[in-house]
Image 1 (cartoon, rainbow, N blue to C red):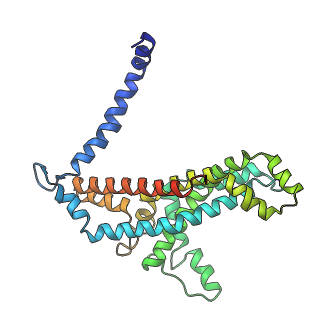
Image 2 (cartoon, rainbow, N blue to C red):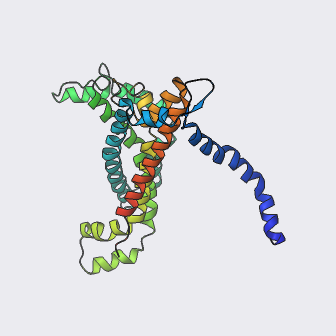
Length: 286
């Protein structure tokens, strides 16, 4: 090995050591723990104790169902809203564009506890502004925290509010990379703005939108904050419990680390599978 290569690895060695200690080893160790029965002392190898339970646990299927419902509804809606927001933010007719860009990105930097408390106040059945607006047009007030469907809708609304602006900024960066002469040529050919959006903008934004979809899928599979803080730990009756919340309950409340590790690896496998499926669907046509 050349001396320059050895020197490079010597400088990288401290980082690689820390990376292996706090990243690679925990991943490997967690996988090994998923095959052990951690409800007894000392722990004992038992593949069926965790993986066997996983495929027969109603709580797991309930959490998986809730997670997939959020994924199938929230991600497409959020990406659509983010794309429209990005187009509007890119419009030359919009004044004070930097201010609006910051305003749409701001929810990401708001503290999770603070924004969860605000959402709980806004959707309160007694004095929330949302129910006051609903009842003002003759619609009965909705018990957002007692009805499973309403609670699920609340989680979807909260997640969309928090991350739509973040994805809009990413898509905006993609919009600004599209050459203007493409639109000028289309305008000279008398192509309408609507046709330009569907036949020029969206195809050229395909890689950026796909990137946002993959990020959103991974984030949704790990969703924890909103059902934990807003709907009171996945309530009502487990109606908004996600895989991330189930993992937390098993690992940190029940101290069943083996089962929690099995859930974690199932979440990772599902996130990878769904992301690869999205990449396959969004691939460039030959």
